[in-house]
Length: 279
Image (cartoon, rainbow, N blue to C red; front, side, top):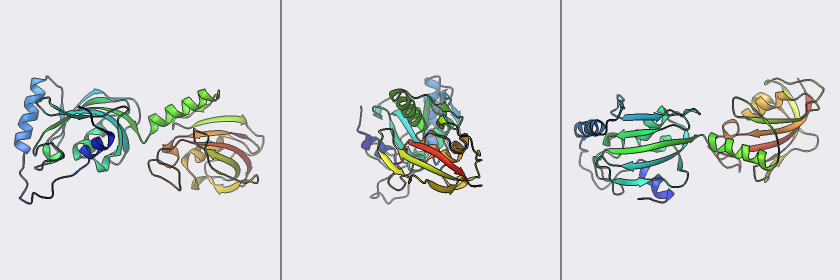
């Protein structure tokens, strides 16, 4: 069974019926027994947390590890303990902030790193509790086979940068943070540090080459402590008079929030010339 992206996100977001005003029933004991029986019957090596969540790590992953407040992209298949599928993601999964999803997802996803795969077995009190929710019966144990595709857009951003470099026949160095940089002219003047005040001429654009901003030929002056992390890290690779390109993933730019017209998760590319190191 497959649903649209909107249906998938709606299913995983926390919600409940407002028509039922009776005290909620606690399914914890029944759910615990149901999960244990499923784990045993399917010979799973599952770990239980203090909250009652069970998880299985099949592939830990090697990339960035999320926190409970991270924006993530996840693909999944969801079913009940009778293995009846109630939904699965399509294409490349869905993206959301973990704070807005059911508690079992918010707690369980951070056990994985990017590229990780496994299973979450979620009791009702970490999902929809004693309320029906969009076809999911009250008190249901939910099982999800998941793959953590990306955290804070980093995997997608890296792929987009690599493609941009290939498409434009560019060769760039990559740092441990995920920043890519190209030194066209190293420069011969003073070299800044991450705390320097500098004057830089720049043009900023996306991977589709749409320009979102640029300085005058005289450049813009600012302290490197007061700009995005990609600039704080990248500008010190140049000396005064130097020029090149910075290709900045969202984690070093504006992250998972829109900012002054720049969409959340955007890769930012800057043609830069370091005019002067002021101090």
